[in-house]
Amino acid sequence: MTCEIGIIGGSGLYDMEGLTDRQEVTLDTPFGAPSGPYVTATLRGRRVAFLARHGAGHRILPGELNFRANIFGFKLLGVDRILSASAVGSLREDYRPLDIVVPDQFFDRTKGRVSTFFGRGIAAHVGFSHPVCGELAALAVASARAVGARVHGSGTYVCMEGPAFSTLAESQAYRSWGFDIIGMTNLQEAKLAREAEICYTTVALVTDYDCWHPDHDSVTVELIIANLVQNATTAQRIIAEAVGRMPAARGCRCGRALEHAIITRPEHVPADVKQALAPIIGKYLPTS
Image (cartoon, rainbow, N blue to C red; front, side):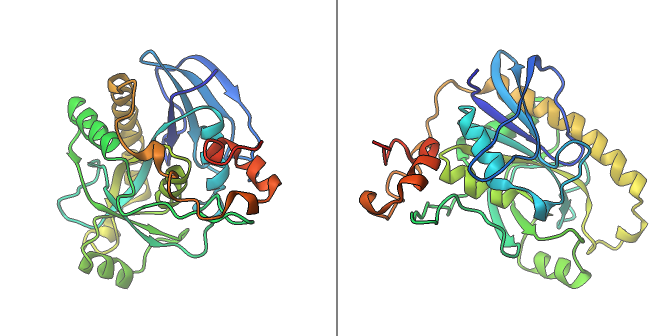
């Protein structure tokens, strides 16, 4: 069954409460296997597909994630909007542990991760000055407020390579540059969602201050895990609220992101590439 809304669960969020008519769907894609099976279900009367980003048991490192397969799988399921939950560190005193941040910008500090469906004979360049869907982000902020979460409706998310956390010098540099939160996963998802013409936003869950904070060394693993658990509960409430409030139709431009982005002349696109990317480019470059 086609799903309207995709949900990506990050650290601590490996399932969703309130899902009915659950079914596990295992997909293969031209880019390999996603992180695991998608759970298709009904939530607040809407068809959704849930994917645990790091796989069952949290076994996949950020740098090992098959971002292309994960987003392509959502496309195959018919998803046109993705709500992504992610644990982050805070680079600001006023973005406190257990706060929610819905970032509106990203800064890339990863190293050589593949974050495009294109290449292999087809070139495309999507606009990415505003990397999240404004409509979906506003809905996430409103939903967070509705469930009583302390939420910040903007911020810059630094996407670092990991898996080690920042050095003190790096953390201080990010703060001096005016960045707000730091994580390891969401930028590649946002880029690929844009190429797939899927709306995307991040519900970032602050677990702790990054190492710049003078109290950082006193933070225990037990405290971080407790924050993860509490954040996961909050994230589920926000996501369920957002799904219930989701309008039937999109009013943004995300669904037309490729309209003027494909540069390669149609007759020069290899047939096998055109076939493989048909779920994404088929309305612009039909296979026949």
